Every structure is written in structure tokens, then in C-alpha cells.
Amino acid sequence: MASKLLLLLLLIPGLIGVAMLFPPGRRLVRHCVDVLLNGKTPLRWLAGLLAGILPPVTWTLAFKCARLIPDEWRPKIHTHVLPKLEAKLLSSAGILFVTLCLVPLAMLVRTRCHTALSRKLYPALVVLFPLWLKVLNMLALDLPTVRQLLERAIADNNMLTHLGLQTPEQDVVAWIFYGVLHFASPFIAGWWIWGFAPPGAAIVFGITLGAQNLCGLFTHLVFPNAAPWFYDVYPADTVPDYSFPGNPAGLVRVDEVLGTHLYRAAFKKSPVVFGALPSLHAATSLCFSLFVACYGGQWGIVTMVVYSTFMFWSTMYLHHHFAIDLLVGSFYALAAFAVTQHFLLRKLDAKYVEEGLTRGVDRLFCLTPRHAAYMRVPSSPPRTGTPDAAAQSPPRDEEESGPDVRSLDDSFPMMSVSRQQPTTAPHPSPTQLA
Image (cartoon, rainbow, N blue to C red; front, side, top):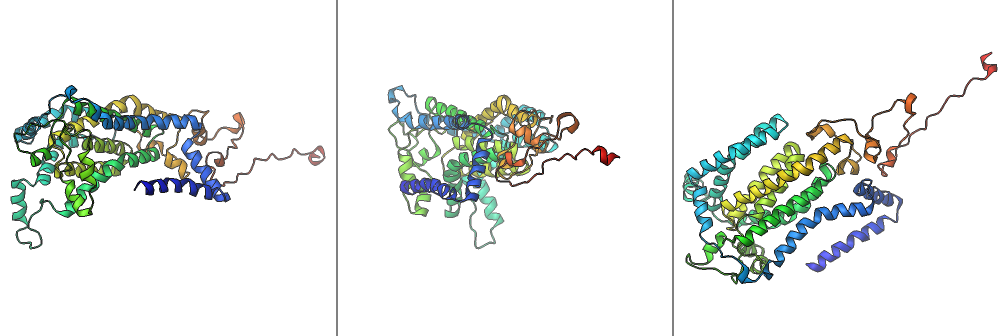
């Protein structure tokens, strides 16, 4: 696997080298480089890239180094706290209590929304979150009430006897979200945000993701809790210690379907075995979803709901997290996003409109920026003096400042737009006047 990955990494510069042998290829490579740099020097561009990558990398290294902490420094492992909180949270009184607690948050979210759709949708999602979590928990764990209702509804169907039982198809779906998309989503989100959000938003996404995961890891270390799989493997009176190996739980069935031992080996060597609360799978998926919903319009909202729904369901279906873990992880993601939006994203949004900057997709495909299409700050005339602003500046009065002869080729090297230079008619001679 490692050799194939190395071969793929070596193939990319090889293809670039071949493309540079031909004039169209050189223009394409130059265009892509200009799109990435966006008027910055390579050193400044690299500094921005590291600013977005370092927080998640720091969290990854801290997670790997957690095994080096001496056992005598570590706190007691809790095995009964989360099941009790789970029972209270998912009870009727618990659902009602959490819903009432979320009403002020929903009202605050409504005041921060700037469109009619968001004013109705986002507060409703906040208030319905506990009930939505309850439904996902019932579907994931196949509780008796749900099973009886579903069996009664499909009693006449010979092809289905149970809906909600563990099946290879559901195992694969849960694995795709929990085991594949969870690790791929930061890279997918980073590129998507670079393409469809204002310049610098991808860096803010990396900072948000790294900050929330570091806070979650700190909680795992100071308040360790057993995951649901612990109660499937060990008796209820078992007192765990830090020598207990990790367990893949429901992912062991995925190993059986795929014919591998990947998850058995990976989870057995996990450096943080008792890190159930908060769920970083929930926090990561919600962080990704909030950024996509912020800049993706209606399709971004649909992506947020669908992706979060399947991720939350898969964590409980595979017995890796309780519903209370998902609730706390969601608050970590929401808090991190709210802080970075207030202090960083709002400034980037305003700068994007005021200076007439371009998104990555605008530069890549030579599109006209749609500043007022989804931004939430009033647009104002762009400032002069920047490459993006010059490309988007309005026509000037030729009598005052002369004609603007800036070519689109200066901004987008791939374009071959020919523009005629303005010519001045010759003055008539005295003979012609006569």
C-alpha cells in the first residue's frame, strides 16, 4: 500500500514534467500556478498553507504521543457515567429539557442569519437536534419499539423481516462514512472551501478543525470514558486500566466483508482507547458541514444535513459512541466555528467584497466573481492596488484617467483574449481644412 502511494506521488511531478514539454501544457501549468498563488509570493503562499495544516497535524501528533503519558499520571477510567447520561438524555424528559435549553441558542442563531430561508431553517435544526438524535439512536440500535413498528409495517413483505438489524449492506454504508469519509473529509473540505469560499477561508477551516480536535483530545485525557463496545466485550463489573487494548467494535464485520484485518490491527494499537466523550467523528463532520453550509447555498445545507445524519448514525450503529458523545462533540464543533467565524471569517468575507477578490474556482475557470450572490456583507467599490481589484474594477472615465488597457491575460494566462490598443485619429492639416 505504501509503495503504491509513493508511486502515485511520483507520478504527479512526472505528468507535470511531460506537460511542460509542450506549449499548451506550459500555459496550463503556468495558469494553475498563478491560480494557486493568487498574486502572493511562493514563500507567503507556503506560510498560509502551513497555517492551515499545522493545527490538524499538531492534533494528530498529540494523539499519537498520548501513549507516552505514564499510567500513574492518568485519571480514573469511567465506565458508568456515559450509560447513565445516555438514559437521561434519551428519555422524554431529557429530550424536552435539552430542547428547552437550546431555544436561546436558536434565537441567537436567528439573529445572525441574513436570509429568509436561514432564519427559518437554522433555528429549527437547532431546536429539533435532540429529537433528531433520538431517532438516529433508535434506528442505529434497533430498539424494540422501532422494531415492532417496522415489523408490523412490513409484515406482508416476504423479502424483509427486520429493518434496523445489522446487515452487510448497512455495515458497508456505516464503514464508508465512519471509516472512509471521516478521514477524507478534511482534504475534500479544504479543497472545496478553497474553490468556493473567499481567499483564506480554507486556512480558517484548518485552524477550526485543529482547535476543536485538540480540545476534544484534552477532554479524552482528563476525563476518560468507555465506549459502547466495552460493554459488549467485558462484564459489567470489569474495572479497566490503560493496558486494555482497543476494539474495532462493529468495524470487525467490515473486515469480514472485505476479507481484511485492517481494523482489528489498527484499533488494537490505538493510543487513546477510552476516548468516547466527545465524539470527534461528530465534531469533524459538523465542522465540515458548517463551512459547506456557510458558503454552499441550498446545496450546502442539504450536504450538511445528509452527511451529518449518516455520520451520526454510523457512530452509534458501529457501537463506537453514545448519543451523549455526539451531543458534546457537536457543541465543540459549534463553539469552534462560532469563534472563528466571529474573529476571522467575517473579516475575510468583508475583504472579499470590498477589495473585489476572487475565489479559487473563479480564477481556475476564468469566471466573473459573484460577490453579492451568497455573501452576507454589503458590497462596496473595490479598492485599487491589488491584482484582484484591478481585474474587477469598474470602467473609468477616459477624460480623467485615460483608457484602461489592462488585458485579461494578465490575470488568467490561459486566456488568449486579443484587445486592440486605442488609436487616435490624426489631426487634419491646414490644407485639408481649406
